[in-house]
Image 1 (tube, rainbow, N blue to C red):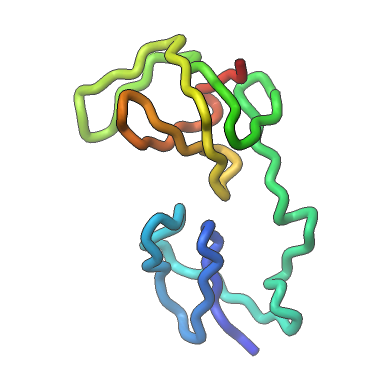
Image 2 (image 1 turned 90 degrees about the horizontal axis):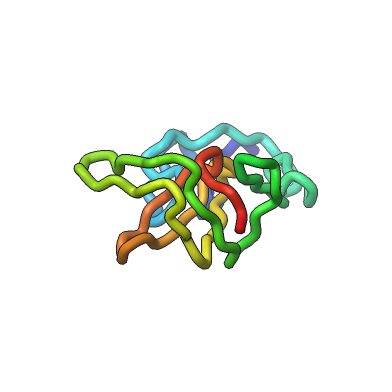
Amino acid sequence: MTHYTCKGACGGVLEEIGICETDGCSKQWELMTECDCSDGGHGMDDEQEKLVVKDSNGNVLSDGDSVALIKDLTLRGSSTTIKIGTKVNNIKLTDDPAEIDCKIGGMEIVLRTEFLKKL
């Protein structure tokens, strides 16, 4: 049975090709991937589902960890710059091993792990 799945956090499934429209999904508005599985596992085993997220130094990150920025970052679409050394508490992992969700100065943003070091 051919169907289409979202590779984002929502795990959405469609019978016909389309885009993910789930609010909050990291792959929202992206084309879903064709899947022709018979077991409903969509070709993933338990090991593939467990993502390993690492900081710029190769340290493994987990939900709730604290990190610091290793580079000044300018937020897209604004003139706001987050300075090097800024500490971020209570990070949240995403389904993408290269990104984390966090709050800085009351703003919810996504940061690339290549610009972070674990504290």
